[in-house]
Image 1 (cartoon, rainbow, N blue to C red):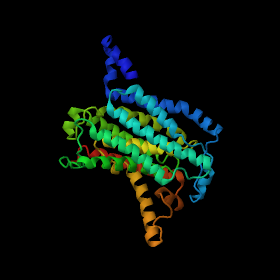
Image 2: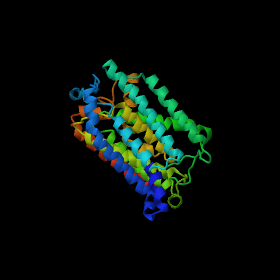
Image 3: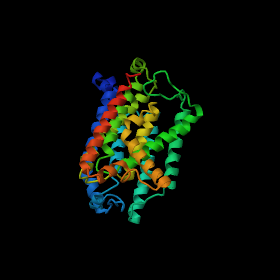
Image 4: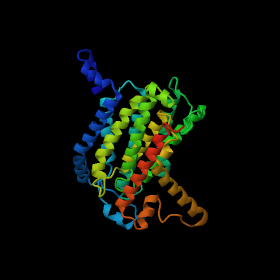
Length: 358
């Protein structure tokens, strides 16, 4: 909206040409989302407290978490709102990729909202059943995948990190692959959201990486120089990533230890789905395993724990997801969070190195 309105005036004054640059609008989107989150954060927290929308802590979790019971949750609405306003304000609204990614974020946010709401109504940590949640997630991801598949000229070739000429063509199987990526990433972020700011920090880092990949992928000269798949129009997703970065920063101000608000499933499912969708449109789906390495480890810890217990009756970790294991080993919560953030930064640097190491 702001982009279309302000750029129109470049016909009268050349200074307004600055609004056509994706880099400038990305900064504007990040700042807009961040200040919205800063400004609305205290008001949203007070509103949630007034409505008595507080976190229901799982009974089998670490005992120290019981003190968090009642902390305002569903703060993900703040992230989604800030991202929507910033993206709609500064992105090119004629770009189909922007609308597709926003659709995924909002839809997954609604699934998370229903899940959180049912938890609050029932007064326990169980919301939607796993079956209900997966049906909703798969349905949204399938619609997104079909739209992507049917886009004129959109390639079904997949990028493999570190290999510039290895581009396997999945053909029709690209649709279920997209569904797997979006649903998997969404649930991986959701599993990670168990400590104050633990999911927010790595998500922020991941969106910084994908902002760079989005810009490169949508820039013909840079894509050709770095030998990545060029996709016309995908550069506009950089603005969305900027909005996500700003919203995450603003939310982290209130979500950092000790958290004044939790994002809830409405936030974690939307963040993960948005990250997965960006990975798809930039043709960097496999890179999610590296960029989101923390999310992968958390998910694997749950799979290994459940599989081991069912097969042998023994547990590999003291508790899953992985962050609870370290808590029960005696690590203070802030130590677990910051160390996971550091790992996320290291993995992000490795991911960026794939632009040159091929």
